[in-house]
Amino acid sequence: MGVRVLEPISRVTPLGLRFWDSATNTVVDDGLMVSAYPVGQPWHAKKSLVNPSGVHVLQDLYGLRELESGTGDKAFWDGLTTDKRRDFILEVEDSLNRFLPFACLLKLPVHGLLRLQDILPLEAGNVVAIKPEALKLEPTALVLPLFSNPTRRVPAGMTSIRASLHNQISNAPAAWAALEVHLGNDLAVLARGFADANGQVQVFMPYPKLPNQINPSALGQHSWLLNIRIAYTPVQDISSLGAQKIPDLYHLFTQTLNPSLIEQTLEFGHELILKSPGSSSLNITPA
Image 1 (spheres, rainbow, N blue to C red):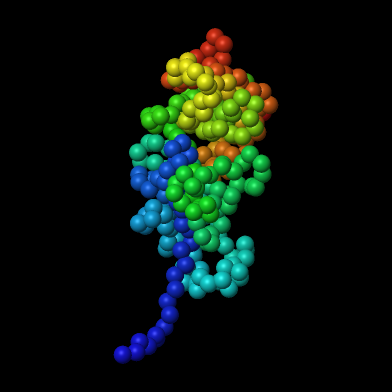
Image 2: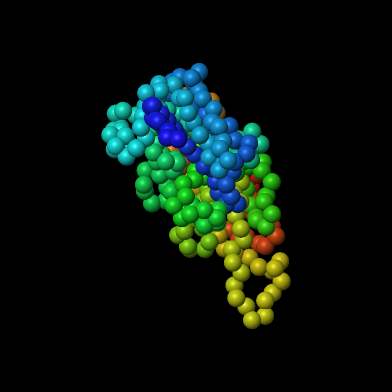
């Protein structure tokens, strides 16, 4: 018995995302509230659906019906020039309060899963070093990183660096400032995190490797020299995209690094709390 194809039907998904916990190197597929809407039209927001692979899928987006009905083949994507795409705001929040929220501006549809490189300029220091092999995924896996909320519990086997960041000039909380951790003089970023709207920041990291010793000492006697840098560019309204109390992801990663280094010693079994002398907070000067 033959099958007669009367009419082929195709469907293009405008946006797909897989999220990654930047602290524990694991995929996050629960508790996230993900939505997208045309710029300036939050009433047209559509929420994502999560497929069995942990990918958030956004379909039926306002104003994209014609593009979603496209063929989705190579010719379709090759002919989809920038002027044919539409500007959308993506918002991501965590109902379980583990991760900081963020919003970002995108041109949809996006071919394949969204990458951080699709949002940020390809400049040194902006793109997080993603380790897909730690996720048991192919090296070409595409994931979008999430950063820990300052109230999140420390994952097992890790330590934390905490601080209450304040603008030294205005004495206001250094909202959304970035904190980078380096091991000694190593230029590579060992860990990275961002402050919340109140300037509170917590960065999780595994303990650095122990040195090889003929007669190893007790774990509690080990310590490491860390160099910490702050990137902070204050803005009048971080919700410039129309999102409420949600930082712009592009702004988070493109803040100006303060040239000064904060040198601290991390001891095994202890978290590190950063403070300015005579203060309960870490006072920073905008770069």
